[in-house]
Length: 336
Ligand code: GTP
Picture 1: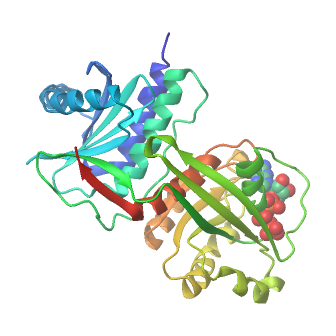
Picture 2 (picture 1 turned 90 degrees about the vertical axis):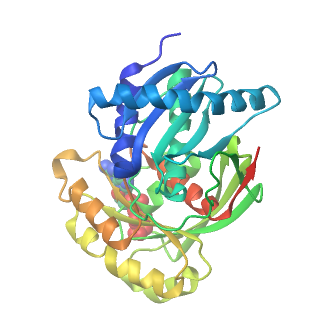
């Protein structure tokens, strides 16, 4: 079977761009430990070969351990620390394992959701299924629940198999909140615009097979129109997750994100938020650049992703990133 090498390389490039300085290398190996594709953190080709050559010797014994685990079931994901590096292993379907090599001082927590998402995409590329090589932008590099234990392979375990989270959507009227929810829940898009009145509630599950975990979102779609502001207050309470959505073709909706952020944070300070620049299919009308989106997300300390509810681009990834970020709070690690 032929693998779309170009897409694989594009995916690794995105991955590097998102992890930045902490990334030493990312390696895709097959189950026999053969290297199928790599990228180094620096992007320098000559350095890449050296690093990857040295690393494969390091990765191999761990891979052997993992391969043994595979034969007795599924390994899922794990971490391994050496004096010099921190490694994250994620199963990428039946064919491959995705290995992320980080600097020894790097934190696993913020990188793990991206590594997992990337491994899922690699599995899809190997399967010949359609997949976008875009990786969401993670700006919040805080917290580290996995303690370092040098030279011990640790399986990433989630301490419950099912979670239910209340998810809210913030953002001005007409930015595409309802459309995002419909795209995510039903996989459809409707062109005609009907204002959301008050709030509408939907449910959707995100499965993470390799983690043996199911995230159940209860989505509360709030009306963006200001006349409903008083109603909104009642619905923001107890939310664990939220999408802050603006329309990339309307600068004013971008400018209003901070006030949405402040309103939501004042009521639910612990909420996990992600910033969404929606309607990227309308390329000619774009008023807000990707860089501006990233800068705002960085400022707010949250992740950023550009989507189109119309074409479906990155919509699932946005929700899955949010889900993984939440599950991330419940990591435990176990020596194997
Ligand atoms: P309120 O309910 O008023 O808060 O609006 P909303 O943010 O839920 O927006 P909604 O999903 O209703 O979308 C508003 C309009 O934008 C509709 O006409 C949608 O068809 C359109 N729309 C939403 N997402 C996209 C997109 O990604 N691309 C394009 N081209 N149009 C979109």
